[in-house]
Image (cartoon, rainbow, N blue to C red):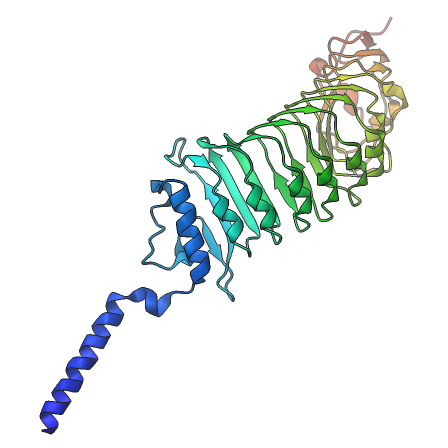
Length: 343
């Protein structure tokens, strides 16, 4: 009798063990069940691309490609959709289900040329978001003003898409923003005056390769970012508000615009400035002697403007010795080394 009972117990134990071995998810699943449901819906909304083949419902979603979970709570905190190949079958719009991942801190869509449609409105629900990257995609339409509601955003990169229309002034309401990249789109209209109200010192700003027009707001003189790139737009008028000896500017690129101001009246940070490019504008006056005191200048270009006078000597001789004639060509009447001698 004991033998029969012992044999039955052993069989039951073996059956239970085999069930557990056949269901590893039951033993090792860490991913939050609701997050997992959202990810599977996200995949379905993208028509189940092979790009997300690792998203198998039988496995732990914290181990899936593009997904990162918090090590303590196991809630999904990052969704990083990056293609390592030139073409992928991932196509469609940004899925609305992305807004149902309430713990997301990092959301990235990068080099996905078949990702189209607008910036998904449900992203407004992601109040914990710190990093939003939508770059090198086919995403189009306006930059939505609701992005200004994501108060924890630190990095906002919307580079190289098909975005159009004006830049929303609400972006200046982001108190923690460190870097704003809206370059290589089809944006039009002026730079918002509200950008002068960014929390100081203000984020690094790249608005290059767009179709922005109008003057540079004087309010931008109230912030002090390390990097500004407004190149390749249709900006007009005075940009001297972006210069100053007490600023911490490292790179300033205003090239290929329609800017017009007296260059001789601007000053420069002596230690921080490493890059100054203002080529292809309508800038007039003389090259300031203060530039000879800039210690670490690596790139300098004032070509294709209306500058006159002798290229300043003195200091480290940087303006005459370090930069060749191409930094100065096609001005009104510049002279001196490396150009021809002044008469």
